[in-house]
Length: 47
View 1 (cartoon, rainbow, N blue to C red):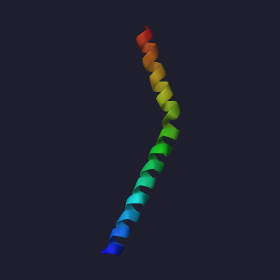
View 2: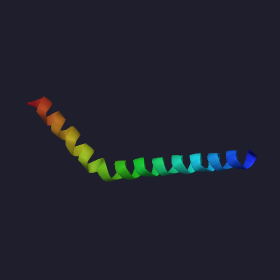
View 3: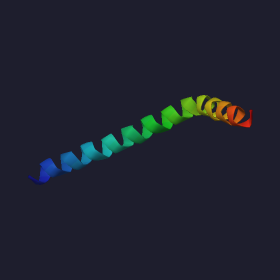
View 4: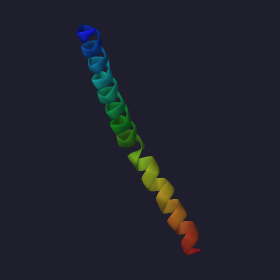
């Protein structure tokens, strides 16, 4: 039982690291896209 819980904790930590990495990677890639979207919204509100 002890070994099984350690394996579950390890899987849990790996899953957290992977999800953080994916979110970071996605935000890094989409940064320009997000900036374009927000500037378009600001321009529309200015008109």
